Length: 423
Image (cartoon, rainbow, N blue to C red; front, side):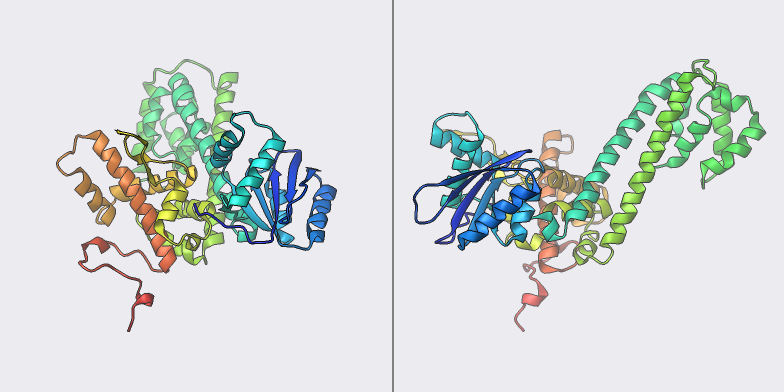
């Protein structure tokens, strides 16, 4: 949330410039006087000493810091559990303020602590949400690990399709289908070359391939088609026991392992969120499945803390911004100063919803591009508008704890939460 947070009167301000191994700390008392500077190493004794020193002051403590990778998480959690109030400093705002105060772009840790202290004093801060304290740390790890494994699986899948198959079995690529299908990888792991199929004969190959193909319509015809394809293949004549084929099988095994890991994460996520009311509300929105819902909850936390949907749009970077100076006015476009993973997830959900039948997202897209079916730029803008609509719907269903209602826009009267209606 972008909101000016005023510092309580009489509070002691603590500015921390975070880094991997050491933290530069600047302490300012409300009555003025000499500031106290400290250097704290990333070690438990130093963290305990800092907490004891701040507690001994005997006044309300407000701590401000800039997020630095994940290095700030441990100290921030230690200070939060000690009962201190934490404020987050925007990296962009910190850089601009440093340039304004010091008339230069140079950066060093003691100078950053001074700038953080100034921003604390004027209230140019944000609310810090600790994932562990907020109960979303597990969700974040599940979501980020799923993304990492999915990216690795996609890279491995593309390597198989663009490198190994064109060399050792080009024609088999037309049977690849969905990258989630493990049967195809199991088949080419057992039969990586056309020669490994033809050497067995039709009947023997059908017997071995039958359990690998899985439950398919016209399985016998599919297996026979694969055999005929192997007989007329133009693949390189590499023996099945060659080192190159061993490397091919190694990459296939890696892809299958990644698919299994991704499936286990999805099962764990669904079991973890099965009783979560927000999760149940999200998955009823068109385009939002289990993984998209997991990512939204992991990246946004409790959406009820956003009092208005515009705050949530700004958090996602979906708010509009315009560069204007004098008579010049630039194009209005997304600011993108927000959570990139959350913005990408909402974009993907809007893409899926627009392809589904009979929902308000598809209708809205049709209204945007009516009469301009061949205009790619207009469609891109329409999808951006649908993404913002998806964010508003996500915020609304959780804020009001009301299930998604399709075609709500067709109603003449503005809808209100039933719990807010006056009897």
